Amino acid sequence: MNSDLTDFAGARASLLAACGEMERMLEGLNDSHGQVAVEIHELRRLGKRLRGGLAMIDDAKPCLRWMSVIGRMLGGVRDATVRAKTWKKLGFEEGAPGSIEAAITALLDLETAVAKRVPPPAVIEWSLAAVDQVKVRLAARTAEEIAASAAKGAGRLGSQLRKRLKRALERVRNEDFHDCRKAAKAWLGGMSLVAPDLALAGGPEAVKLGDSLGEENDLEVLAVWLRSRGFTPSATPAGWKVLRKRQEKLRRRSISLIRKELLPALGR
Image 1 (cartoon, one colour):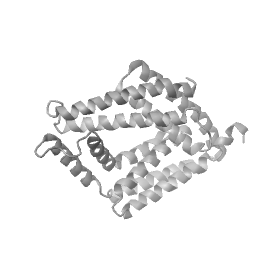
Image 2 (cartoon, helix red, strand yellow):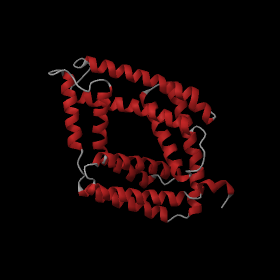
Image 3 (cartoon, helix red, strand yellow):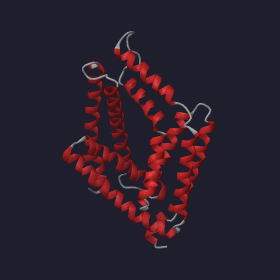
Image 4 (cartoon, helix red, strand yellow):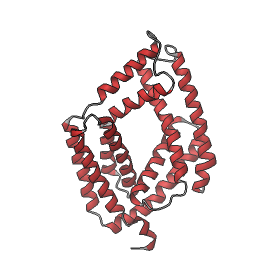
């Protein structure tokens, strides 16, 4: 194997091992002992890393689609939990009796409780079948082929991240920052599987940005939910005022992280 590919030599084995871990976790949902939300969160985190790794080896067509479907099917409990936690972090843990804030808190808690159920057997069965197909595709390629694809893909995803960061600074649109978050997750998650021992220039800075953009995303998810339930800014002025103020603060932080830390670390 070319010495330039040494860092990626274990990519095939790591990806197959991650698939095996996902299968184990999916099967374990049937015996979660009340920890469904925690286990699904870990499953989705692993799924995002796998998507990054699969994108890096250019196996994107069916495999990425399957991983995305699994994440979305299992996303209900995570989304409900995040919405409730985000609302309470804004300072509305307990609203005054009879207030609209108390009603929102109660409804969010109810939806979280309802979501904390084991997914239907058919969902788990389809997910297991999809992961098995990913394993079959990985097994059909040699370690050398996957290492070469991973090395090339690492550069491609890194370049994609830089382009999206620059575009976000130029246009300052919500969708651009969302794209930055996805690109950072794909790059970090993929590298953690295909080259776990390789030191990443910009890695720590990308993690910091991901955390900031993740908080922004959580607030936007909550905002969408509030509107969908009729809790508009005019109906819930206090809640929206705090939410928007927090969003603006996080956006300023994200812009600063991109401009002053991540892009310089990536070599612009």
